[in-house]
Length: 301
Image (cartoon, rainbow, N blue to C red):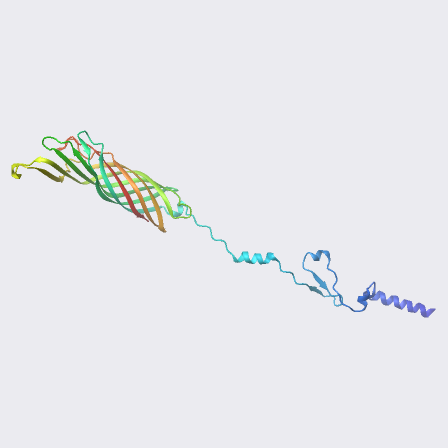
């Protein structure tokens, strides 16, 4: 009896001291190695297998996902930079322009007894300095050499028959203006501008050319009918100063930074009759005003 009790006590002690043998299945007792099922929380992340025999956790490889591939492709591709749009302050405060203007002149508001009879041509060089007032509004002042004039004819008389006159009044002018410039069109380098102003001119040269047709030549020329041409200067019969109003519209294109090409159309009206009233000139009753229109070609820095 004593031996039986001792044997049972020995078996109980052996099982209590080794946890492997407490409620262990048969494959554990046989020394086989199997992977334990992952807990529910671990199934949503990287699965881990545990060796029962060695109790060492083994990390399973994480499967490749499409998101990682897409992230690499998005990192490799770079979006195009947005175009830089120049603001008014970035375009500078001071601009210097050099222009030439092929133009035509004609006379208007001709007094009774005379009529307009053609145009004259000339080229006007100009230097302008524009200063920014606010945003895209500029104020400008410059200097130019301009020639106004035109052609007209007088009604025939018994003495003169047909009389045609051409006039050229040359001035050194000081133009001043306000100019409004639009933003560039989209991503292009072109813009429009509109300007209005006036000009004060100081006369330096006054010329005329008179052509008398079908007149009776004196005896020295054989008493024949002919044409007489008379040219000369009329400084004493012309006013010293002139005042004109000016309007201009055009297109500006930027070649490189601080270098622009400009093309436009300019019109000016001379407000003062260039010929004096109490003159000794042969056409004492003549009165008119000058008009001018031209193509503006220039560069601006």
